[in-house]
Image 1: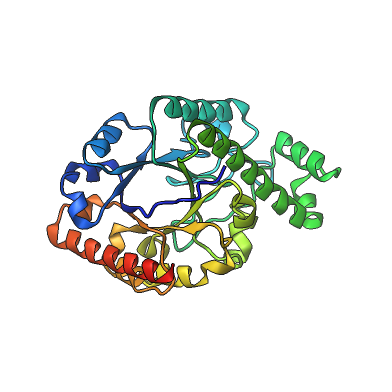
Image 2: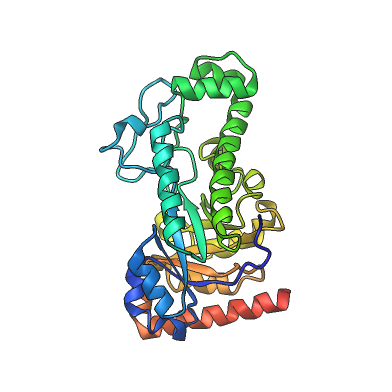
Length: 322
């Protein structure tokens, strides 16, 4: 099922950048990532020989419109949430059916170069320096699924977290990995050459008390059979980090990501050019680059040339590492 020849892709995330599609190749851009199966974005990408890559929303919804999807917290009440949140109750079969139908419909109508699964996590938000991390997904159906999988009899969230916290965490990670495998299977059945990527919480295993797996249930090892390219969100300013964060992540990525899988960072245009320059200088290269909000860079020829120089430097490093 794995694509053995993952191409190097560099470019903006966000369809607004396609306003400058005719100029993008001059800046070293050969791909564009955009939300959903956007017919106009596919057309513009094809006309300018840019690889069209889809960001596919999995477990995110507007809780104000769909309060039934809000996961339950440890006290049996809906979790706190603000304007930005990801992760829905994974026992809502109608929502899961809608998500799968949306993916199948897009695969039928389009041929993306890659599909990056987004919000493939349990509930929370990590694009901030002060995350509100809550244990969640304790509805009766989710607890029953856990008990059946772990062969346990445990009805209360507090009891589960007190006596079976490790098994609960493992179960959540296995559940997310199972969905990843299912979606990847659908994608590969449609097009074996379509890249399957995933946007990831950019934390190490131990940060925020192991929140990468404990809260978000993203286990690289369990996800690796389905995911070919891992893309952590390196949004330095939003996360209260230094511009060199991306380089630091790459230099320690071998302790996180299985060796046979690629790491392709997504950087934030708010951090341009410092973040990109630090990544380009890393001895451990990123397998291509996505630039969130890239329209703000490629609308300026001078910034566009800065992106081009970084791409050239990364390609040289990658060539030397082969």
